[in-house]
Image 1 (cartoon, rainbow, N blue to C red):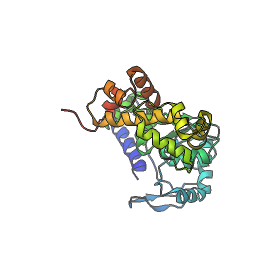
Image 2 (cartoon, rainbow, N blue to C red):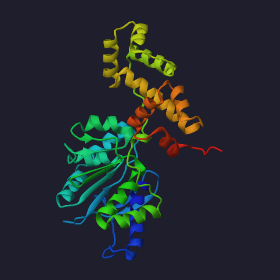
Image 3 (cartoon, rainbow, N blue to C red):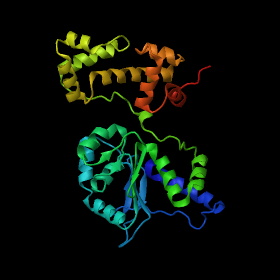
Image 4 (cartoon, rainbow, N blue to C red):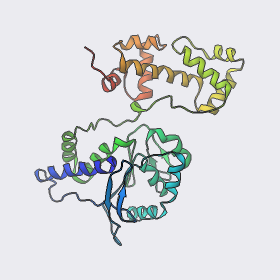
Length: 316
């Protein structure tokens, strides 16, 4: 419900500011549309009154909210029931409407086929599922927002804040968009998903060799871990070890080790008062500049900027 009601709240704020701006010639209005009409129950138990679309009705933009994810099978079955919805969305887009989707709503937009061959993004924790279902979509997971040919996508749930500000900028200009962002404390500089995404998302597999290698690296990442020594320990060649990692995890052993170290550094930056140089050493990097460069490459922020953004408690 928040991803739907939240967008409308931001449009209400825009309407409140409009009389005092140069863009005062119109106000935002909206309707809650469902093909069946009537009350729709949101996943949190709140009811929403909707109406059916009128014949030949066209909108400036159609917003597709997030859907509560109840598991792979339930979500997949839900998507398969929306054929009429996909047809309606395609017709709206063909008539000039922007189609705007957030979080799991991007799956609905992708099911229309309109994202085929085009850039899109989605919520990070369903990236693998999205790629497997829609291999023809050019999925970009670094940015929070994507826009191409009147198709706007956003990442995880609260990214509707930025997406709404972007819409206000498109229809009413940068000044009103900035005013709305300031009124609602929306950080428009937050354009990347990477600082929020875990580098070690759990992936189940049954490759005993890779599991043994992972366990060893998890227990020894702060020390000197050499691929040659690891392969010898596991009684395989380096080439075999690299191939098995790539087949199972889609990354090399070195890349996995670097992610282990960066994740450990993230935890220390969030919870400790250690200097960045000390954290680099604690996670296995004697060269601080190499650590900072790798950290920024993976997360899009320097360690100092990451600490400033995500530190949970303020040091005395």
